[in-house]
Length: 336
Ligand code: PHE
Image 1: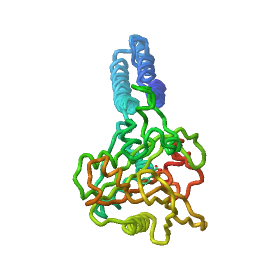
Image 2: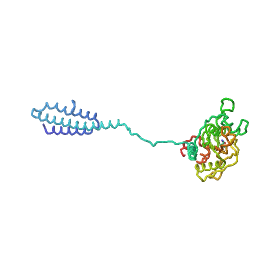
Image 3: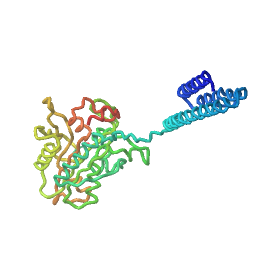
Image 4: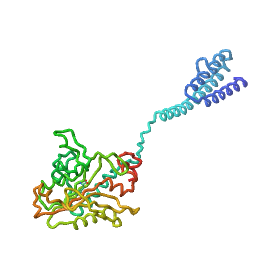
């Protein structure tokens, strides 16, 4: 083989190596391979020229050409391996699924502040030896009024702003306007001594304003025992207010009138601003009410009280407006 032909072959192999290294994917590599060692490739083209050489030269040139072809083929094999690995990695990356579970902080709610107040009240009274009683929200005139010494003609009926239910004779069935009917139901079903509290929903025709709701919550208290009097009532109210609010809050009783207690009083608690807030009514149970429930007033005496739980929550959490309790604004409720 002549000198310049051998140099040409080396240059060709080198060019092939450079182009192979420059191929960035399997497809372009296959094209480069074809252009050098394919049927119409440059090296194969050189083979055809061998025929024009002398037999002696032909042998050496053929050998050099074969070596060149196999060295180009080896470079292609190496490059193909590199590109195949890269292509596989790329495919794996594109098919990768992120199954990592992102665990967010659990967003848990809490009890409404009226429910919290009710639960706390129950706890305080249970701690004082009371049990918790219940009654229905729809009542008959007997339980809501008559047994409580409020006969049909009695002017006190008007003061309760009752919501009647369209059932039976007019004004005989109603949404209870206070929790006092639970006093009657308890005395009918239970032998004295009785120490109960009865929290629950109550209803009146009131229009909602800053201090009133037409559907509100009361808690009733009833004690029937021997030798019970006004002093026991005042002491009970004072200890419950102390346990609920702290002992800096003062209570006061103002003479009042309820047909089912005698004497009767309204009780107020002191507010941080120095005013008094009316919380509810109370008194010594009327002998007539005991009789209506089959209890002998010569043997048993007692006291009762009833007050608004919502107002208590307003006071405890220093709210400006009782309607906040029913607006269901989570931003407000979340604070308590
Ligand atoms: N039931 C009365 C009211 O709702 C409150 C009360 C309860 C008064 C018990 C005396 C005794 O106004």
